[in-house]
Image 1 (cartoon, rainbow, N blue to C red):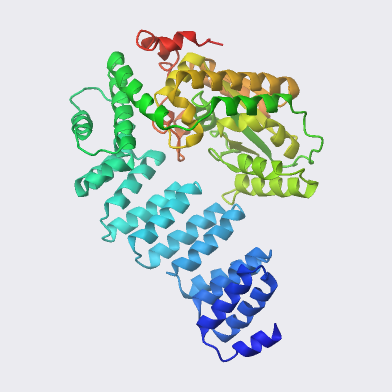
Image 2: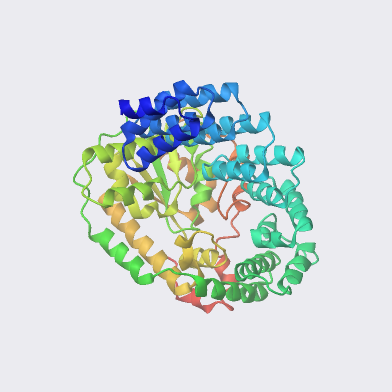
Length: 514
């Protein structure tokens, strides 16, 4: 290594970069780090060398030094998006998501960037659950003259999650006016989700029908419009027409799906047969993870939003970290150190850097599959299981267009029935194994007596402070199909909704109520 560094002494910056990157690619991280350390002294103003050095420091566990280098660079070059993106990724790994939002917003406040760079930041922030920061960057770019249809489409999508429905329509209309391709960006479905339609004379109906008549329309776009029309006619109480559109949409989606009922069944049987984890970690003393689980569309979003009314509760939405760590830990017999790493990283993503709380909610419904793992990592974990009439759950699933292939079962009633039935089997299994940690709540009970049911959940969790008023239940972003519904006052009309469709969807009659 000394010989290489000596040989590079008079070389241009590009040669230092090539040598350092080559060493890193061949697994010589220590050698690459030595080259970049020396290069940083030789070329102190080089952004490329600083990014390479910071990346290697991060890789070797020197996180604080990497962060210091990147932060110092942004102090002198506040519009440097490359440095900001690397720093944002580093901060995200530590669960410092408020800092991620602040870092990226500052960069875009100090300089104008091309649309692709703006979109990269918006997608990163949306993925990290920072929809407010993402929308701020998007709208700043638009206000600065970047009148690009893609930005308007993203602003609309983010506006739905944040409950800014009027602004969303304006952004969607602008995107549609600029390019016919905007219909391929889920805008019809977005428009349908902005309100409850009161009349077939609403201009969206004419737009949906006209778009369906286009030649060369993509299959996924056609499918989305059919789902949108199904929702729109449901709003009007025209259930026969809604069922026709939804049946057509689901048939198209099912034909394109790759979900295996056999694979699902094998997974469920394996979980039911598996013993509890032999090794558990000490439970945290000052916080409690709360998992709200159940079959999707069973009321998990509603319960999470209302529990978050309590001042010492934070709702983190649907996280994917428990599934991630299940996959990582199942590849071999995990060591205690690996389990501790999983628990620590997940804790960082739950607790974050936006204030302290005592209870943190992860409302990913299918964490119901991973109760054993969660109890091994945090023996004080609590699970609130949402139960709902299977026929209403099935209809709600069948009425949605999902973007995540994990929900491809939702386009076939037989697959839906299998998922709902197996979720109930799992819930019964976990309730028996962890009786003190597992609470089932009826959706029908909650919408019928929301404050009483909420109080019972709070008592079970050990929450003593009173909740905020109900109107504050859904002020944060909601990145699920419940974005509009969860922001309304609790209503009972979704309980028993399946009866409207029984004449047109007889498959519902085969599903049990409980």
